[in-house]
Image 1 (spheres, rainbow, N blue to C red):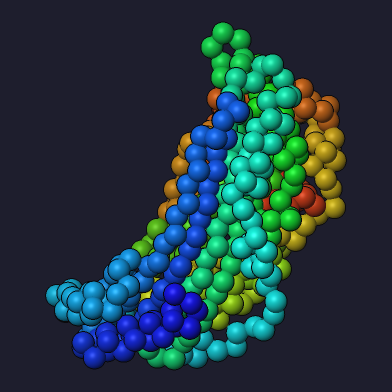
Image 2: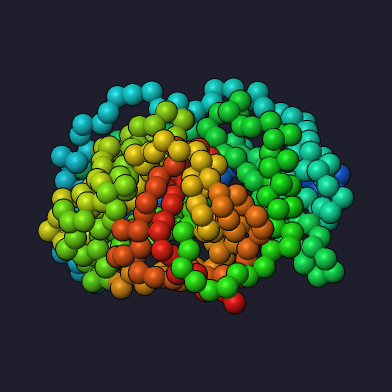
Length: 440
């Protein structure tokens, strides 16, 4: 099915839903191809290719809502699917806030080149994919005889999506992504088996790091965990590595959602325009980053994407409000979830931040734990490295950090210049003062 055929089918399905009795309807059709390779013990362990065609239908029937999906895109099957979806919606509870967005929110789409489609994708062949994975494994295994095993992987995806709403929205998107890296397990004495990983994800294949770099980094991260132990409980300075910091920011994003606000389960309720963090913190939702993993012109509801400063020097400026909860709250919709998360970056590298720490902990990952979106209380398990006199001296694990997000982000004292580029959350390394750690 080509792009025009998908678009025509989406309009056909939407028209059928309206003829079946829906007041409004929205249809999205997605085609994706995904290839996944795993290499382990010098052998190809997994080669999987999946191609998926799917249609998602949303219908609004007398203020009743239903969302259904199917992979059978033959018109005779869709006729029954659409009729049943509309008929089933009539039995649901009426909800006065259920309707498509006001069409005014569809307008004003930015015209830009997002560069989210690698045109060379069709030229990528399976032998190239296998070679990449096998080379990553070989590079990792060559780093030490203490390495027990390495699982190297490569994945690429091509997707096309068309979306139409019965009140005027129509949008299309085509994108690619490429991912490669490894997970490494090492021997630590008689019983310890530390492990770590390093993966990179990009929009263009040529932007992936080479196999040598990926394998070496994965091995290095696992090897530096040998000898990891708890430290004594106490209050420490804390640096959170860029790729791990998303766990902390995620504990803020949930309470910023319209759903949490409407259900009174957000510690950020009523905080719009107020200080919630250190002035070091400026967070930006930018959907127009070239090659960004979250870049887009419109969101899942058809709302035109906009760049927003969500937190400005510690002051909360925006929530993430979708159409439905916006109506329930009496608030203007923004978007349900961020696109690319950027920061106002500092001037220091991670090494320079470490050099400024007298005694603290560099957190390289989080293990388990939870955060209460209503109160802001949190507790996370961590792994990392002890920092003494500006140098990392030994690995740390089986410790917890705890506190409350209302106070925690006010303890932010430094923001690095090293955004993590292999995620839609381009977060830098972050430094916090006076963090409570529990250990021995």
